[in-house]
Length: 250
Image 1 (cartoon, rainbow, N blue to C red):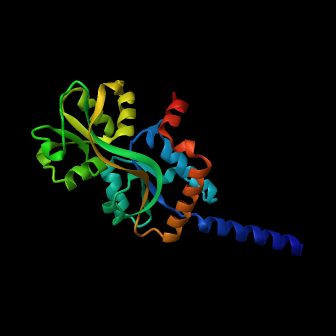
Image 2 (cartoon, rainbow, N blue to C red):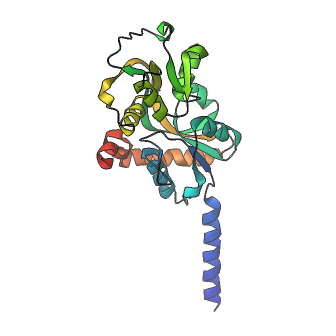
Image 3 (cartoon, rainbow, N blue to C red):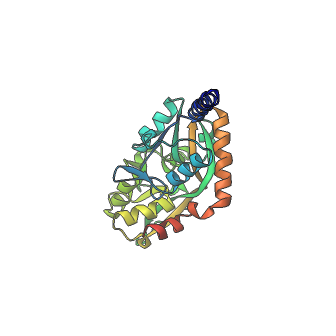
């Protein structure tokens, strides 16, 4: 009888310990395919798959209800405002590293000014934009890079998502977009637009996408996630490759 009581007590203590070590983080994300996007009420994509694998490797409980898909400006603000919040997928920059704790690198990201192949825009730098209108998503890396370069607000057209960016570009309501190249190509496909009709007019920044957490999140959790992500990238590098993702989803 005493042995059974001891066993039950051990199970209870183990359960309490297991629950206590779960990070209880709130995750914010946006529609940013193929890395994260909304399908039938669920968030899917390369980044969410990687995040679930991190949780599994760390023996943490992953709660789908703790992942919220919002427009990027709101997701960005909510992460900065909540001490237990994280956001993905975020392009790493030195400026953002002062605001967030990064888990990464996860995926490469090349941000560029993108336009239609039929146009003859030749930009040597951002100072040569002239009267051209550039579509951006507020606080997205494309917007932040243009703002840091001193591009005036008059040159920018703010849209809610990458999907709207490519649609407005096709309709010629804007001349160019500042966005991640891989994500733009995927958004073109989603909108039924042939990506081959568009080109990179001016590269802006090559960096990486990762997960970014509020400065209030315990550093031990950030270190654990970084170690897990590093091991996963070595063990399963293909799951971070957009071309592999395309082939699996087609």
